[in-house]
Image (tube, rainbow, N blue to C red):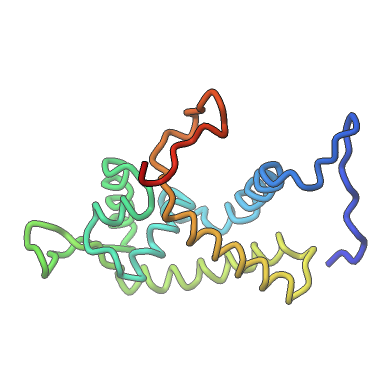
Length: 175
């Protein structure tokens, strides 16, 4: 854990210390790098890991609900679930609420695998956050979780590359 204050990056007289987007980009790239090795054996890597985690939690009633919750195209989700089934981590079972649907359920191996993966991912995350002390790390995780839960309610259906001519010209919710 570094105790030295961070330097303020300045280029051409512009202070980049508060550049939220750039900070997120750097953090995301670093996250992908440190977590990737822990997820090498998971079908489809991070996507498979996140899917397995949601399946183990068990609150999505069917494959379509799971795809919608995770923001994964339903066709892609079919192949992802096929890969997780082949790996013995999940299985498709009849949905007791609707026999026409299949519920995705974690196997005992899937639950054990997720527990091991969560430990490995947490260790990788701890290495990534080693610049923070324990209280700062917990505060960061708490705040990040709160923001993530809040933005889930936003309409994120627009294609990520679609840009309006004026970034401030965004329709208000409900209009």
